[in-house]
Each structure stands twice: as C-alpha cells, then as structure tokens.
Image 1 (cartoon, rainbow, N blue to C red):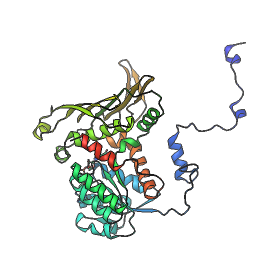
Image 2: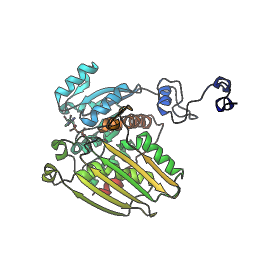
Image 3: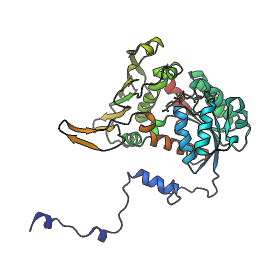
Image 4: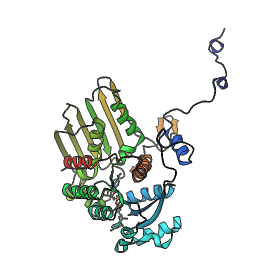
Length: 369
Ligand SMILES: NC(=O)c1ccc[n+]([C@@H]2O[C@H](COP(=O)([O-])OP(=O)(O)OC[C@H]3O[C@@H](n4cnc5c(N)ncnc54)[C@H](O)[C@@H]3O)[C@@H](O)[C@H]2O)c1
C-alpha cells in the first residue's frame, strides 16, 4: 500500500465541528463584541451595563490612535474632544460627523469636568499638561486613563495617585505594550514557569520614524519618554523591581545632542532574585519600529518578535525579500492600544482591577530618574 494510502484518515467531518484554537484571540474578541460570547466566561456580569461616556484630551500621535479606538468601541460614547489645534478639531468633525458641542478648546474644557454624565477621560496631551488634567478629572469624579508618563516628575505622579486614592477613582497609566498580544503571551508563559527561573531579559526598542525635534524638546528625554516602557516590561515580566542599574547613552544626531538628550542608550538592570535585564534603545531605526522582548531561563527562551504589515515574499535573483517590519508605533501596537482601551472600559464598569497600580507606576518612574 502506498504511503499516501497508508496514512489516509477518516473525513474530518466524522470528528465533529472544529474548535477554534485558543490562540485565535481576534476571533474571540469579534464574538464578544457581537455579544455572542462571554467577555469573562464564568463571571456574572450585570445585563444593564451602561454605555460609558468619555472625553478625549488631544489629537496628536497618541490621541489620534485613541480617537479611532474610542469611536469604534460600542461600549463607549465619545462626548467631547479637547484639542488646542482647531484645524484638527474641524477635520475630525468632518470625518466622523461629530456634533459641534463635542469639540472643545482647552479654554472651554471646564464643560467636560462639570458634565456629570462623563464616566472617564483619556489624556493624551503633551506630558507637561498631564498632572493638571489628571487631578482635575479625578477630583471631578471621573476615571482617568493617561498616557505615560503620568507627570513630568515623581512628585507629580505621586500627587496624582494620592488624588485617585482620595476620590476612590481609578487612574490607568497607559503602558500600552503590556496589552500587546505577543508580549502578553510571553509574560503569561514566564509566570507559568515555561522557561523556569528567569535569568535574563532583553528588550530592543528602536524608534521609527525619528520623532520631530519639536516633540523631543517636550518629551522629557529618552529615559523618561522611551526607557520607561522597557523598564515597565521587564519588571512586569519578572514580577520584581531592580536594585541595581547601569545606563549609558550617546547622542549621534547633532540636534538631539543640542537638546542635551541621547539617541542611543544601553541599560543593564539587576533584580533581587539575580535576574538581569538588558535594554537597547535608539531614536532612529531606518528599517522600521524595532520592538522585541526576550526572556531566558534554564528551561529555554521566549521571544516576542517584530511583525510586518504584509506577509508577502518577493523571490528573485537577489534572494527572498519581505517588506520592512511595521514602521511606527500605531502599526506595531494597534492591537495593544485597542486592548488597553478595553481594559479601561472593564475598570470603569468594575469588571477588572486596574492592572497598572500606582506603586508600579511610581517605582518605574523612580528607575528613570
Ligand atoms: N504610549 C505610547 O505608545 C505613546 C506614544 C506616543 C506618545 N505618548 C505620550 O502621549 C503624549 C502625547 O504625545 P504625542 O506624541 O501624541 O504628542 P503630539 O505632539 O503628537 O500631540 C499633542 C497634541 O496635544 C494638543 N494639545 C496641546 N495642548 C493641549 C491642551 N491644553 N488640551 C488639549 N490638547 C492639547 C496639540 O495640539 C497636539 O495635537 C505624551 O505624554 C507622550 O509621552 C505615548
């Protein structure tokens, strides 16, 4: 009998309907969004969860990602957008046909805080404005999701969490990478002991495209603006905070040197268990937004790798060519930003605890000082 015949199986239809694989997370979330599957299987969820009214502050690089995600999320109603650039407001109004009343300049933003129907605000303004908006939001009884860093300095962040505690309102620091499916998988596998005790972690976070000099001027510097994500990742994955840190940086780009900032940085962290982390940062990777995370231990290694916008391969006499990796953070982390917003909805509806605690945020910010 030929090998093809020898290994022939019965028709797959005889085995009953095929289950979706447990990694098929997008399919699962489509079903949840259609109300065809439970968001938290086994958990009793009230039938009458209200739509959540939210306000978005700023339509810059980060805010525009949140805008699309808010408008596409059936759990949310975007009641206000506050933005200093009126041209941006007009363009958004035209595209999404939002009512005039929804578009607010910073001078009119009291309307947001005084509106009792607003459940939460999402802050994506330049960092220097975070603390003021976060505290006003919390004091007005709103839940707050704020882009990292929560404040320009440790004391400011501490004040924000003190207000959150006093008001009994959640404050989510938007560490979006924790919600990226591959990073989340790596984290969960490490927690399950798949690689055994963590010996070494590595992150590569090389920015693309090169941020504008205007942005860098107000960014707070590469440690505060970029390293904060990587330090958060390695602390989150290992479940501990470092006791020793070594960092060194260089400025190869003259404009960045003039700002007394660096464009290339190496950080080594050592944790109480003996685990170590190496963080490799750059402001300018010409081949795309290079974002990788690795954990290594006695039982093996886990790697979360770069993704590509298309999976097409062009083979010719010079070899096999793929398109570059995702070029920017909105592309690389689009799923993470969506999941982060879902988490904020869950927090507002009391379905989940905020996964980034005040203590987390403060300890991470402390490391960047
Ligand atoms: N988590 C991430 O991946 C990520 C990525 C980029 C930026 N960020 C953070 O997001 C924040 C914004 O960064 P960005 O790159 O989007 O900046 P940006 O310069 O692209 O945009 C800032 C926007 O804020 C608007 N603005 C200024 N003052 C305002 C006010 N008083 N009220 C409302 N809007 C106002 C500006 O007109 C502009 O549209 C920063 O804190 C940054 O650290 C986070």
